[in-house]
Length: 469
Image 1 (cartoon, helix red, strand yellow):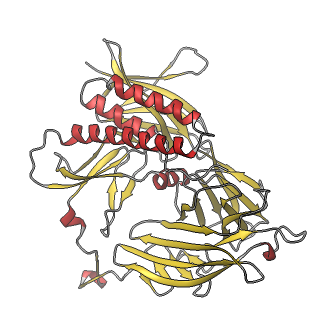
Image 2: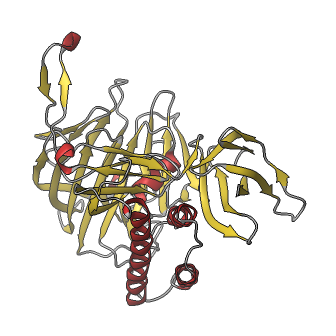
Image 3: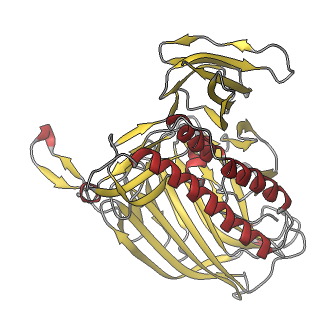
């Protein structure tokens, strides 16, 4: 089983390198391109490598990303002589994201852009106006005994087991989801029987943070079999943030009893359950959203549980394997026999409009660079796509002596065609769409400062944009 990894897709970082090259009117250094080509090959070769080799690869990937981020930060702030220092949040994705400075209110970061954060302003407590704008008071804390909440959801914990008993979204009486941790060891002939699973027992359920920006509850306990024998220890941290639709889960396991030999039938897992039999299950397949009726599901990005007026999105952060049991339950596999990972991270999105964008943002949130001078403008973007169901999967600057510009590969993810408007911080003179069958490229229209790109459902397209003199 492939364990969860801190590596994320490199399409966002390639966009930052492309923007840096375009803004600086110079090509990307050959050594940077060579490094990323070498790392791409190393990633493919590391799938079945030893753990020490993978650890070295993680360090090389982190160093390469830091180099790209430093070059981009230098491009933004190199000419700044401002004495003010703060955090520079950089968003490499093609959808807007939120940055969460420690214990501070969230800050919106534009798609393929940046936001400079003044630490003093970010630490100011959030306030709410009274009726008719009269009076003000601080927002209530996000955590109290056995309850987490923000403006999008409310989470109730079982004090005896530590499991999430129910998540409500304020829009209906039915809960969105329930969650717990368990060891599955098959008992008898019924694969859906509760006797197949261990029971959570909470030793401690405490509020770790209860501020106006972050709420956090930590549960420590044991997984016990039906005969009362201990199978593992666990620690689950559940976190909500002001302004975020995503509930964050961090799980650590102390495994004492190994699962059985069949990885699809015996495992440690996060169990999810919902109330509505008619809910549809969708998964991210090759970054596209598709419905699924499979019992054994592979999806490292997300699973989306959809009802008429509710949706719960499981953000997998690289955990690829899931097992559906009946119409209302799902196991996300954590540990099978031979798995070495013991720490895991997942998210639960409450009514997020675009699951693929949420999954990428959860997997790779905006990078935060400390002690950066204030740029000329506090926030901005390099490239802009006006449809959130379209992702850019690759960027590359180019120059042939006469023309300069960039290439971008675009993927529609939700299964509906759109006329995308692509903008860049430099005006485009012409653009074309390349055909994968090597036929003549299609000339694209330019309307104002935008290139109009027609994209069909789940279509993947390569576009070239040329700048003027």
